[in-house]
Length: 125
Image 1 (tube, one colour):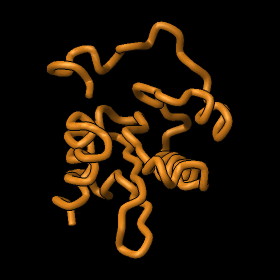
Image 2 (tube, one colour):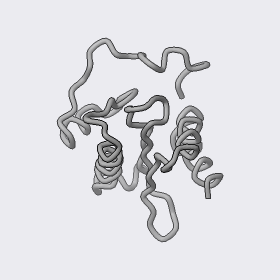
Image 3 (tube, helix red, strand yellow):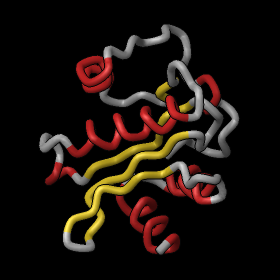
């Protein structure tokens, strides 16, 4: 199902997110979680994609947002990182900062953009 998952991510997120997710499939254990209902992908979350100790990319279908799926994916990813010995995580390229602040008490690191993403080819889309 790797090809289907990566295709979905490319369609619903971006080509950059698709490439980052591809890296997650090479890790052991795979560092990507899916939310699935009736064999349909509702969302995903990655960790250790761009760099170790980084959470993201992540995405939940617009129609499924507000149902706790994104929070569940976030928490499961952070739990997996904690199981590997990480005391905290960096949320790379944060989009909805208020969501992360509400869910896990995240704080913004001022001046961190574009940070690790500055050398991506083209725009990070």
